[in-house]
Amino acid sequence: MITEIAQIEIRPGQEREFERAVAQALPCFLAADGCHGADLHRSVEHPSRYRLMVRWETVEHHTVTFRASEGFARWRALAGPHFAAPPQVEHVRSVLAP
Image 1 (tube, one colour):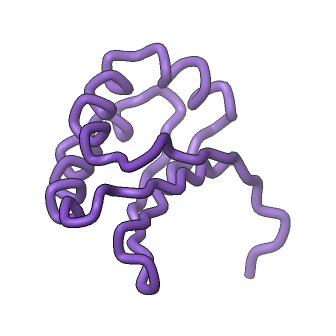
Image 2 (cartoon, helix red, strand yellow):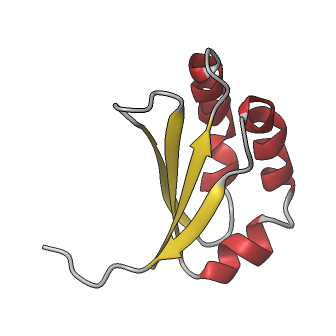
């Protein structure tokens, strides 16, 4: 299992709209081949900074399959207008869990 972590900076004042856009786009992720769930987290210290965490079977399920899908296009159409900068994305694998 791979976790995509996308750090997303939102234009100040658009936080609630962004959260609504992600809620609308969540089904796009959940319907994607290889997706096992997603969570959105908001920074306490930097309220315009979010981290979207999506669990994928493989990196390719995200970078190839999902990014070529209508779901990805819908996600970007909904959330993209609120981005202050392009998201910073990395993929991690758990190496230690309780």
